Image 1 (tube, helix red, strand yellow):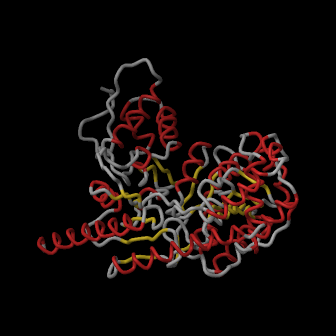
Image 2 (cartoon, one colour; image 1 turned 90 degrees about the vertical axis):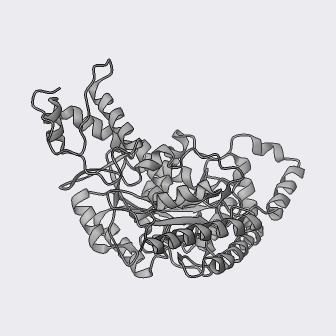
Image 3 (tube, helix red, strand yellow; image 1 turned 135 degrees about the vertical axis):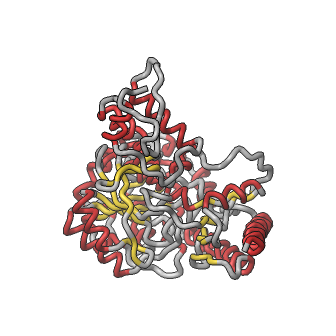
Length: 468
């Protein structure tokens, strides 16, 4: 036992050092990870100050620093200057939060896949391509940026998302997730900080963790980023970027106000921030709303994805970077092999240019509307948020639940939903809520899944009333 430790010292974590061959900081990081996974250290637990823990263990403080840094990069810890280091509220998500239940015939209402249809219009385009004599040319290498006519089709597609741009600024990428990875790799460095909503898309979290980029949760006002919080993050956290999903924010389904969009643009220009605007759900809205990029085109990189609105197998997205970053992004896409094959670019271009994409988008919107009307009826009386054309809804749970507990209970009964903890960033305890995807299961499965969720909620309510 360390010389200067004592049994009753009030610390939240007292690891026991053991002799081993691995470096001490790796041993401590593994020990810390295990204690989080085993539930010894719960999400939100404040860890001892680094110097205090080093003194307790009688080791160098730099060893503690390296161990904490390693766990922070894995998304297990989150540190805030002046407040200390905490176990992240989404830490358990890093271990695949679900227990090992043998759930047969699982109804998938967690993954946000669009509805399965015949994709008739897309098939027609592909069949026409296959019948052409020069089809084999599409199986060779092609221009990284795509042809001019393909970019013209992309520009019209992006215009429907609320951002008017030009062909010379558009770059195709292998899907929205890959676009995010390329943006972070090409325009940010390890150690940089990016501001995000306290609950945000897990894809930005995993990409940031992989590249050593810190995500800073920004306090909100009326469900969207507070101007005061953003200014504070620029000054205190030295954020270099901002990631937002203005339309149908994932997971809360919030629709960002025009005032907030303009505020973000203004502060980005004043502080030289780069806004990463993810427009993945824009086309599920019943009207076109101006994108943040419209107010700050030289400070915003816009992402327009096809997989959610047209077909999940069409793994393609267009990015529109500020002109000064175009060459950097082109190099980043090439260097990390995220450029697309000519075949995929051609298929996407023809689908957009022919107008067939509009039929596919409308079909997905109609299915989402049908499902949401069913959800509204079955979950009537509960706090469910989101428009009726959304691919997902946000269920705020009654008192007595946490999101992760509800997710585990639903999973055990054969329904997959995603808890708020999966989306959490930083040390703020997430609201007790779950995200429900509406289009992934069949219509029959969807109705059954909702009934199971309601039965879980009712059973808990009955239990609470008996206890009171």
